[in-house]
Picture 1 (cartoon, rainbow, N blue to C red):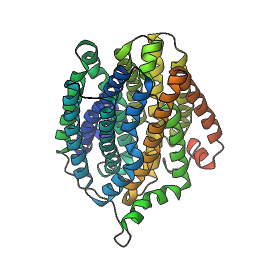
Picture 2: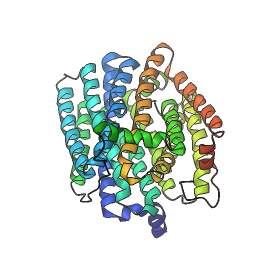
Picture 3: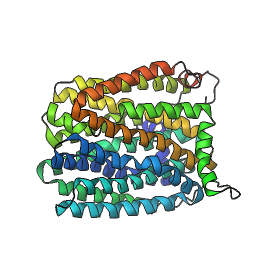
Picture 4: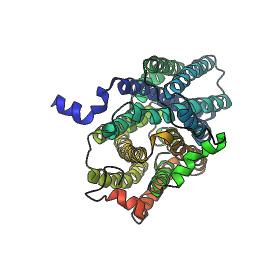
Length: 417
């Protein structure tokens, strides 16, 4: 049974370089999500409102809108492992500085937002470069498994980051949470320096910098299936995954659970995401994958509605876990499809374009949601977003490009159909 689990669900981990990268991203992802919780709660404590939580969260996510195209270009122009090492090093330095400021009571909301911008830029560089590097660390036939396991670190790290800082925020102090994040980044940096694979894309030397930079957008907008997927993911992230700025209000006003409630709600999202990501690593049928993609899309919209209407901590935790499970399944499949349709010579820039749409939508919508929540309430915002995405999924079946993904023909090429 253990051999079956290894060969079906953990296949990509048999490759040492991928396993090392996977471990590094697990540490970095845990630090990133712990920071989102700690920064958001500190901003909520200082100001007493959701707007600054939204601004700080916006600061951590908006760099994907402007930095990832450049990072994607760099990931095709220079060695991808070297870019990872630089981003991990700078992230560690940033986090140590932040911990010192919080410890000495100097972390005002404006400072939190400015440092969140820096952290978000470096996190974007890490994720975009990782997406470009993974196909070079494992055979093509194991690509979906590798992408699913990488998604498990990104999604499951919500759980580990939240669980790790929960006792620190509840029993010690918030400063300790920021120092723990620094420790996570340090551990990830050690792992990155163990990767030896050299990987770059292809930059046309006869074209200008801006022309090469724009090649990723031209590639995405010139391939109907990739464009349809990117736009669908944009709607998904905006309407169902932009909840970080709402969680402190829900925890305090609805559940009366304070900072600990923020941790266990985000942790529950991570737990559900981790289970689904590992499950997706074992799915091999293109037909099954297409049906699951449609189902995960529909249920991703229902999860926020369930959380909005839950009246107890237990039901809220289950609703949050359901949100994480469905969102992770949807994002894992969408990322695998886009990567399988993309040529390696432009993979870094396409990953950057993908991140622009994903991160930009989440950053802007988190800010908008926070402002609306201060006028109305956070639960209404979540419920409306979930309902809108269910409508988007229903109408998406009418798109020929997406319908071929939902219901691929039996003879179609795996994933790329």
